[in-house]
Image 1 (cartoon, chains in turn brown, cyan):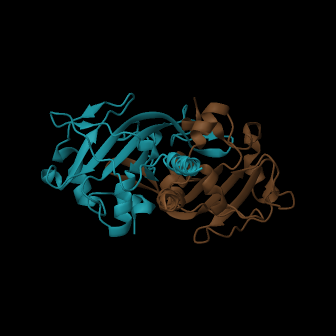
Image 2 (cartoon, one colour; image 1 turned 135 degrees about the horizontal axis):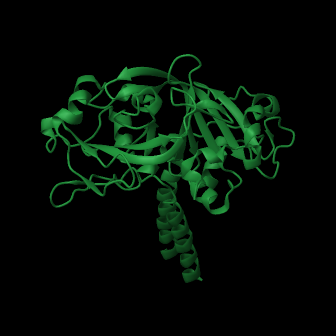
Image 3 (cartoon, chains in turn green, orange; image 1 turned 45 degrees about the vertical axis):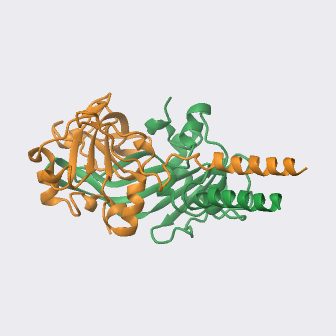
Length: 188
Length: 194
């Protein structure tokens, strides 16, 4: 009886503790399954806005007009910043999310300002030093790679990371394909 | 035997409990509310970088003769518990805090508009932190400025530990005139604009 009652109590505790974990407060190990399936299909992690760490915004300069034409807001899975600052690497399973916005530039009271306007989509990367999906064309060079159009966070339009993704990352190859120097929170 | 089992269950439960707070966001149930000194100044909020990031408007030096009011990236965060309520109700609840952390762009500038070229291309890249501004919603405390209090914690580092509320003429008038929703520029922050 004592055991039964306590078991129920303990289960309640577990359930109580687990509930917020699955909703928005997951530790990295718990977050991964929602963002990748057994075949290595990546998804935009649900609730990344609520629990991911903001790394920084890069504003792409407009070609002709002043200011920025695109803004990229980059987020990392909870714990990533501390892990990187400690080891200089992203642990296996680390997810990075980059939102890509069309931005607009206008003269406002506080100055000429560029700001995000329309979400175009997301880049998602997942660290994988073990080459877990050798037959999947979206995995390799230590990462899983995918682009998602806005409105379709579950299904990537990328088909081959070497063709679709890698070329823009070549300048950052020495830092494991990520522009880690560009994110002040990652510096010690 | 019984004790062993109970002990195991306790350990298991504690392990889960101990793991769940491994986050940067405060649980929704426990909001971080504004803290004030005895004289009524606002104390610099804690842990804002783990709050909900909503956007980063940019006023580069190069486009503003280096005289913009808020140099240069404006990384804006909302307190997570307040964001949860806003998502459900569409209303910023009493005690809502917005934290605008300013951040310089990477220098030196290479073009008249303040941009420079990095390996990824030409643009504006985040560099040193540069002070902060904070707004707090409290309809009674800030009745004279429309229900929001406006604070400046320096536009340089380190941020001030406390700040005095700014007068209507300095911040609130523009927010009241042109911000889309309840003195908040939701039109510039897609996560808040719906």
